[in-house]
Image 1: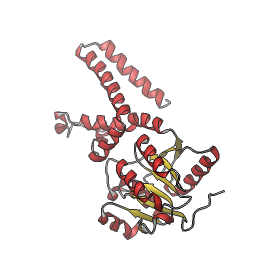
Image 2: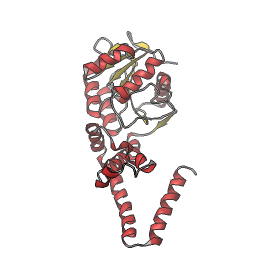
Image 3: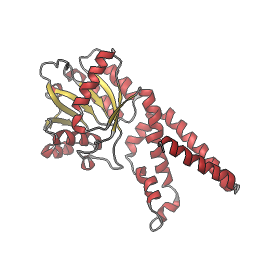
Image 4: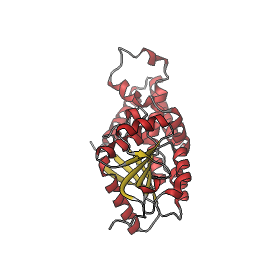
Length: 290
């Protein structure tokens, strides 16, 4: 049975905080499904552009309390700031989620803000995106088939199941491919490897002087490894530092592994080099199930 919503909350109405790549894609997905979307954005011109064809209206003190689901799609600090300011306005029975790429900081702060209030915060991280940023690059199909990592709040099993079921129903227009439950610490540990380390390596890789000479000599390998070298530096700086312990550990591991390859090459140790390459090939096949 669906939870009783407070007076003034419109069932199915969505609020989006931040109309960048993620927030814009959520807004477009819901709008394409005919769902009412109210939005807030720090830059007014972006909000006005979105209101032409995507957003129903502005998410402000008169509409925050009417939304059943509110999505915090900004940087970690800005998402926390918005919730701290607007928590008293969120309607009874509403669900607030975020899209931030780290979970320990965001969940601890947001859950503390929500403590004792009549709505629920659920940490979320859509595993989707591109190397580009901004509303102009958002699209309604961004999340189609993509995984969504969900960090459930501390509550009894029945209440947690009810919230998660409602969340799945509310997010149905986004067409996520799967919902993966995790603790905040588990999420941050794994994401340090699957996402953050990849951005660090890609960004560092293009700093070779040879990168300026790649045209005419590069194909798929170069494109694959450099795709996420192009990034939003302020956002990723915040994410990296909020997950510094796990990310630093992963960087240390890859430095050690690269040093082993370098030593084998410097010493012209063919047997050792072949063994290292074969080991990497074997591990890749194992982790991909092939």
